[in-house]
Length: 320
Image (cartoon, rainbow, N blue to C red):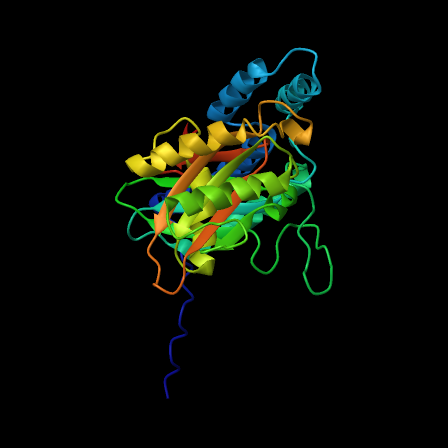
């Protein structure tokens, strides 16, 4: 019998085109990580322009040589020094919350893994503190990764670009956040906007400068317990100088800030005119049996930033 011809092993050659595709794929991953680390660095070390302008204006309103004037001066110096040294504004870099807006056909799972890798690398660089712990064991992996952390939310939008917004929410201000169920007979708050006004003022009054005031509020009227708190926190993505599209809520936002700044609580609870920097309110449908009002309190170290990425995932522009 004739011997069968041995099959030759054909090595797969990578053509120049394939090399370009492979390199581009690797580069886009690294570029994504680089962009996300820079987003984390800037968010952790610099307050956005709208917040800085509001703080500077508030500081000017305080009476000279008072404790409030001194406190606002320290806050401004802290902002300047953190930016100059590129170090966190606060030792509590807080819960890391990503809001990712993407076009149709975007693959969420691989991007989520790059987000997690970026958080770990940013932690190693010192832009984030190692302060995410296992709630059952108290174990700290030192990576800021764990069950539910970082908190990552994806949204499909009509745009062609990927936008990533980031909020770093400190534990102190989260502790003085609140949720009310109306009616609340203890403060005479009914199921209307006047009742909403009363519970918001009650939350600020109870905080008494804790949570590193002056603070900023995100509020949601309605929804179930979970969604109400979620939408309240998402209001912190709005710029402090924007205008609510709903006339009644826009009016209430302004009234809340004006009233709170007359309570005399002041920065850090030391007294003064600056208790609240802003109040942003939204609403969500509810079932007749429930009427929740959720209040998400943010400290003066208002760490919120965002980027729009180009097709190669480099930073195209800053959103705040």
